[in-house]
Picture 1 (cartoon, rainbow, N blue to C red):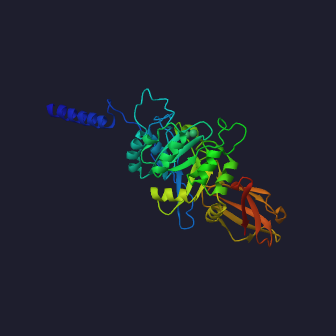
Picture 2 (picture 1 turned 90 degrees about the vertical axis):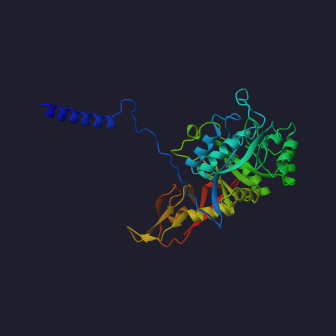
Picture 3 (picture 1 turned 180 degrees about the vertical axis):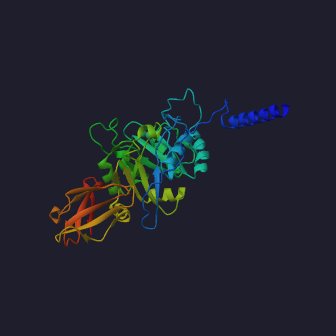
Length: 370
Ligand SMILES: [Zn+2]
Ligand SMILES: [Zn+2]
């Protein structure tokens, strides 16, 4: 009888222990966490250069942003970027009462995180003045504290002395240029002296066609940057869009490579399904992204079909310039997808305009489908 009771106790203990192993009443872990994954952006490398995805304008709590610097790095990694710059305002510090750190703090805090994620981090800051001259990013500077000076010209000289590159931010921002987007003497002077290296053709959620033309006319780097202040996922509609970014055609994936690409104006702006920049790079990006299949005949003897395949994350909006060939007047090739086009038999090649690929203020990339 005693043996049976001991055996029963033993069995009950086993059941209890087993139950406890499965269900600890003190700490129940639930599988609610998301996986941290990087979304790889499909953009071809062209011309022997590596195409780097960059966002060189963003804010943290160390100016008027809402996030800690390390979060900027984590976002950028998840969203497929290679290089970022945190560019907190030198002159506008609304959290100063709570954060007393100097102008290098956001870079230093982001750097530790950037190393963990193998992300390139450019040291920068935003010079924040009324128009003219407006707002500028100083990129590749060494010490942001030395740029905290009264006269804008002095700040730009100090950036130049440190080997920094100057980018004119959001030149068409309506708060500063309400009626028209124009260049002032100081901008012309900076260009003349070789002290301006690029301009933002697109910023946050807007773009400025005239600024594209200025960049092309003066061989300056075109840029699209997010200028993000909040969490990126709280701002951008990532189901349908990517964040604004600058594509850099670099000799290598390094900070030196990024700097050299900006100085050589080997960049393209990518924003809201639009591409803008020098024709030579946009043409190569298109040709490296899209393949055109051999024509095949389907239902009748008069019509041929061929497949157009997009291997990239770009979207291409076509206007057929010779609609008599039987192809639709307008058609869209979505990212990473194929469409079948119908043409009259014997159509060798036909010209199209890409309405979302901008090679000038009033100019779009022309392509031949053959
Ligand atoms: Zn700004
Ligand atoms: Zn900004």
